[in-house]
Amino acid sequence: MGRPLRVTKTLRKVYESIKDNPGIKSKEVVKKSEIHPTSVFNMLLWLQQINLIHRVFDTDRQYQCYVTNVDIEEVFKQQEELYKEFVAQRDANAVVEMENEEDKLLDSLHTFSFTQAHLKIIKENKGMRRTPLAKKLGISKLELTVGLDKLKRKSINS
Image (cartoon, rainbow, N blue to C red; front, side, top):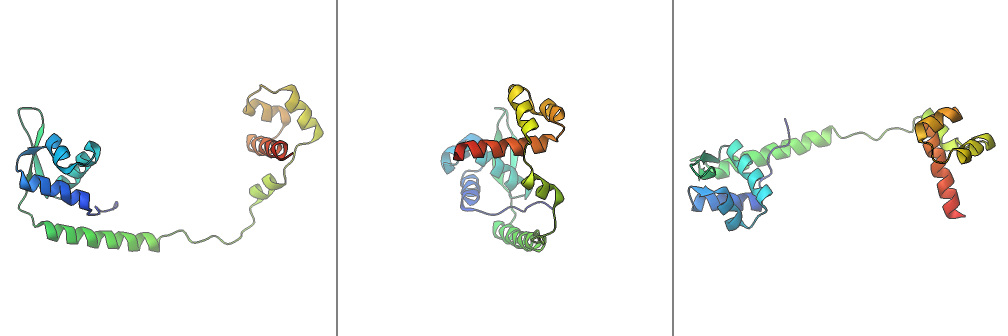
C-alpha cells in the first residue's frame, strides 16, 4: 500500500469549489481556488480516485467536475485512519541504527594515500579521465577519487 491521501485545506478548497459550482471545468477550479494548476490537477485525480468527484469529458475537450453523493466527512475520517496506520507502520519499519561494525572498505579509504610514484603519474596525466588513470595507477577509481579529494582539501587548507 502506498501513502494514503492526507486531507488538507487546499484539497478541501478544491472540493468545495466543485461542490459550489457543479459542472465546473478544471481551469475554472484553478481560478476559484487560487491554487497552482498542477496541484489542482493532482487533487482532482485524488478526489476522483477516492470517489468524491467524477469528471466528464465534454465537447470543449475539457473535463467538467461534479461531486458524488459519497459523504465527504466519512471519506476524510477513513483517510486520516489510513494515514495514522501508515505512520505507525513506517515508524515500526524505521531503520534501526547500525552497530559500529567494522567496515573494511571505509577503513581502507580512510587510510588511503598516494605514493610518490602515484603523484608523478597523476601530474604527467592531468587531463586523463579517472577510469583510465585509476587503471594506470593500479588502484580503484574510488580510491583515486578519495585520494584526489584529500589532495584538493590539503591544497585548500595550505
